Image (tube, rainbow, N blue to C red; front, side):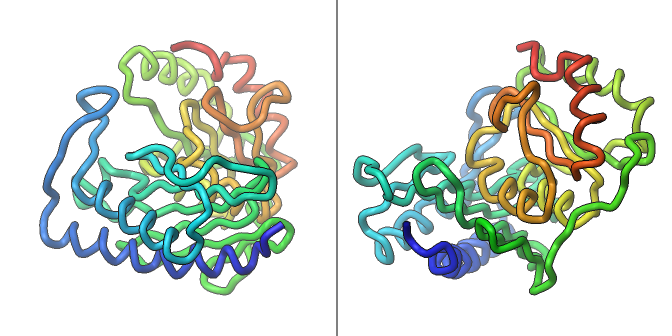
Length: 268
């Protein structure tokens, strides 16, 4: 297996350069705005430029690896056992980026044999950066992360997000209605990668969301896991499109059970 620390060092270097591109393009003004799945699901010229930059940088450093990016899909040779697949979200939180809200991230993870072994999430607007390697812990600015010590769901500040499809939002609103009376409060910041990192650092006590793609949670999910959180789907499922829940062990079961009762993984 490739060395996770070496893969992380490559990822950090590339993401810092790509983050600077995103930050600079935001200062210059957002351009090339189009939509994807719905009229509210936006993509910008910066999303595309950052993804191209990261893919090209990885080709120079590791030409035989595969890259799965949000905007252009998979590129590179067919995967074989032991190959590295990089999972990239060039700008997670594009709507925030569009509105000049400083809550967006470049997220890059390295996956080997289906398991994420290294990941970095960087917020170019603030310079905050989170890193993790499998079995090596999670860090922000050199400080090791351990998640929240909160043990009661009723005292938990919980992050979440919503899909772009109106029918899905209606279902998610119903879930939120059923959860809100059982937690301290809810926060919706608009970047799954940063939400997972916030949960890893204890700025959120827990986090859940339906509809996340691999690039949304690969790096942030590793950061949360290495900070000691349980990151999973509902009813024994792995984290994925149906549901991602990230919470310290003491909070995971009560949050999981309430979400399952509310059919949070169901609906459109």
